[in-house]
Amino acid sequence: MSKVTLQGYIVVPTDNLVAVRSALPMHIELTRKEEGCLVFCVSHDNSTENRFNVYEEFVNRAAFETHQWRVKNSHWDQVTKSVERHYQIREESKLP
Image 1 (tube, rainbow, N blue to C red):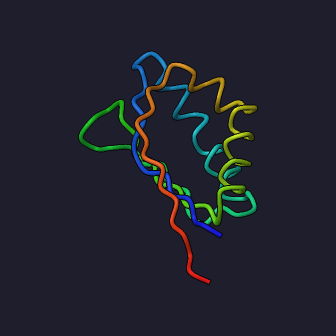
Image 2: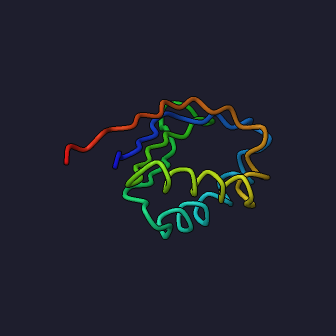
Image 3: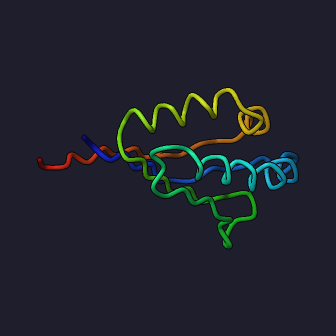
């Protein structure tokens, strides 16, 4: 079993900031309730108005992929269509 970590940031177009900020709390709440979610943090980057830092940890690839599927079928996906995503995804193997 391998833990999956996603780290990076999103850049939100200025004309979409209000909608993204409004939808973000529910997105965070729903994700944190997902089975296999260890950590889920999205925070505004104080140095850039349109940037939000993202850090996620899931217990394994299946939990991460389930999260991705849910997001693709959510209000959050609709609100963030125009958002630029800059992520690195890492999978850490656990020794038996």
